[in-house]
Length: 408
Image 1 (cartoon, rainbow, N blue to C red):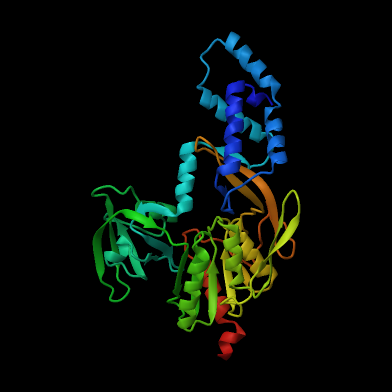
Image 2: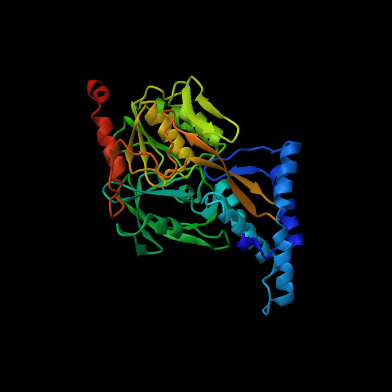
């Protein structure tokens, strides 16, 4: 325990207060899963937690010796306190149990809130390599005349090409919401091929958790991308499926690539739209193991389905993909997923820092434990070096070759 030897009794007690306050009144988040509501510990557990946290008598002794003999100035008390917490957590040998400083914790909350400064457009590289624009509803990009399917060719008069990384392009289209802040984009209209340049001011963008459309390559294939599992996702998915079904799609692609997770209960509700009842996931805690089941009556329980996954598909996204695969409801195309088979509760502490604690494990319906291994796709794909969407292209080809499609 030598990493935590710098903390005095005063600072150690503040840790105790912070943890207990966070446990009792903080909102509980997760890295990959999120549980909403208040956490109230039984008195016996709270007392045991307090007793365990107070059982570090060497801390006072070491700090006293430092105060008497250390030749250089000691770091700020808060720095020592945070260092002690990190040292304590490092003894657990669990990469998902960790401490986050207040500024980073606030950034994390902003990400979970799904907001950023930008023009509100999704950029997706096609299999040919084109950068295709899909503006969000009520976004500055849509107001400026960008339509779904338009091709991005330049940002701030600098040509974009196939060698640019997706993250770099996304960042160029985002920025702080200040007076006169914005970006000029040049794009080719899908409708008539006209080349258009327009300056678009940045605004606060509320990112939808679901993006959907009928694929231009095939009007019978619906495409649904789940960006993150939030409280809005089940309703947004229902809206997406109703819209696509009304447009007479007969097959479906569910894109879970680079989806890092989100709300647990909502991810089960999402899976229920594709699974007509039955087990979605098994969850194991200290006390027990129980199954989370899908409700009956999903909108897309019989539509032929492909799920796109990659190394960024994690946690709740893996839960949905694993349930669809194990229940033989659809196949996975892409790369092996991240392998996040544990649940981390995130406790907000008294100084607005946060503490992530691994609290449960989960297994697929076939009881596969994926932590550290991930889900293997049914059709593995090597990512294209230039960012072409070869996984989407393979999914389209797979669905077009299904007997149901050929007989229709």
